[in-house]
Image: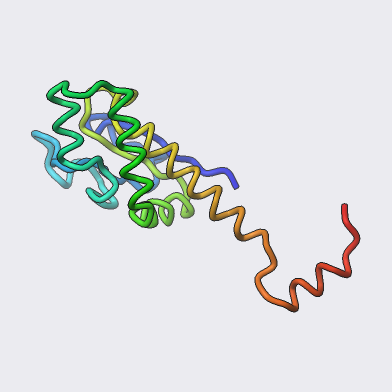
Length: 143
């Protein structure tokens, strides 16, 4: 199944096509009132850890290392993606950040991992789940 996951800055205008709007940052964006963002949720758990974010912003690590370590964090706590997966299954999911440049933020990595997790879960759903289903499939001719 194809899922639509969009990436946006919180400072971009709200659009009807945004679907579920989820802010995925540890810190609240400066100068923004909650009502102006039309958020479905502020979900901090899928954002990079405070330590990793600090290392990147203080330029102790480069972008490639930041992405690598963030992928590791997401792999270690894959259950943190479940709420985002639910939103993606409902329709368009727009992930929001206050970062100036989306392409160097954590959002592309999060989107990549989220889509991979959805694909993995969808692949598991193609297997018959009970013995009667297995028996029914044995009667069918292979394609």
